[in-house]
Length: 373
Image 1 (cartoon, rainbow, N blue to C red):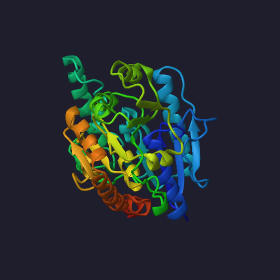
Image 2 (image 1 turned 60 degrees about the vertical axis):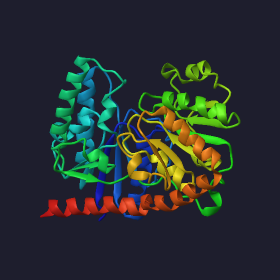
Image 3 (image 1 turned 120 degrees about the vertical axis):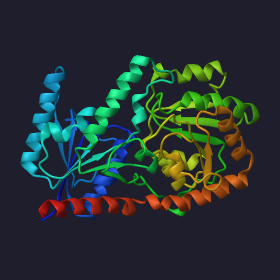
């Protein structure tokens, strides 16, 4: 009889990184490792999935509505109902909010439970300067998060850097699997005059820093373009910023692209300007297409993925001048660009799904064996 894995998450229909990871990982577990995989998501009864999930996966939708108490009641009762029906062998919670961290207290612990942390704790920081009250609130929230993390059998983070954020003894590092690994005929030739960035418009992604860095790049290489793909938020003001810097002709803002692989293939450089990350899956995706990456050394992820000056370039976090200089360096030196791209393609193989999902299989089997003793 197949072992049953239940994922609890807020949503799987959107174009975000968590949805992409879950579509790969859960599908691989169902199709290649023989698990019976269930996913609970919220308010997605008639939602189409942006990413493709295995047809073997069984999805459960919970309708939540009303105020805080009504929402929490419908959330908890819905989860308990699904657990009672399917009797999972392992539950994995992929919810970066407090309700996810406190799931073992809120729903009980009917079987081994894992918490998957897909973002840095820095997600609580919404702007560069924070007030004293916000700092105090964040301090207490971080302590509550550490308490919740201790309730799980294992707390899984994506990088070694992420481990430093948590005061826990149940930590494990399992990276995100690659979304795709195109064959050698599909790689970028690194000759198009395009620099690519992928991710939603937000404080976290730091596209304001990237666009500011593009001022120097554009002055030296006016024929190159910066393409940013991701959910557009006018309130972030990227379009206005590009226009104020007279860059609106060479900075292009596009909505999420389902076939993002084609955009990696068209790019010659990938640039990550994030203030913080959970992992940086876009880096591994670009590298799979043989595209060299330049990234701020933000917490956490890029320094785990990029070997500085070998398969890409790591820049001091927030140093906009160094970011623009590094982009110009790779534009100027096509041989270096291609050499780094070739090394990136080879190095990224460690994130192939068969290697990463195998680690999840080993963890699940270990927890199931312990629970049977």
